[in-house]
Image (tube, rainbow, N blue to C red; front, side, top):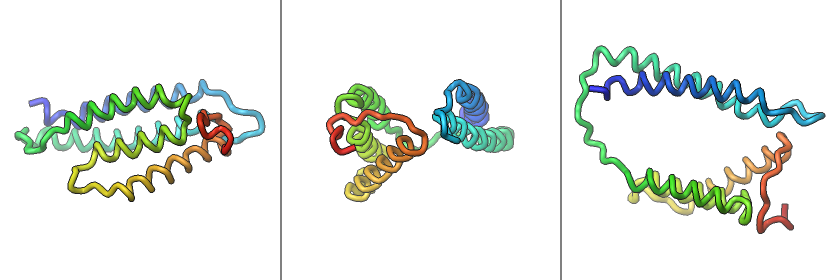
Length: 158
């Protein structure tokens, strides 16, 4: 019975989370001489999250009175969910000694593999996407936002 209210409830919770993230984004100070500080990205993400959750809430409200709850034939991926959680803990522990670039690329690659069905795996494409995205995020944070990220074993390169 609660399944048909899921989108509505998740949308409301997401909007509350987005509002909290947006408000706490103002607590992050600006770096002198920079137009965009470290608080800009959380506010930008919170705005996008709020818009998406508002749409989800509206769609959930429209469908919760018309759709009957049915059993889903979707196979739950507990291994992927728990695996990503365990990888997040390992990622956090490895961030400082290994560095942002290597630990983030490995984490992203493994997370994509866990979230994808085995028959749809494209490891070379996933590796390229992981490395390119992590390098882009690293340089945006470093050069535009002025945020220092741990270099770890790549300290002499970056």
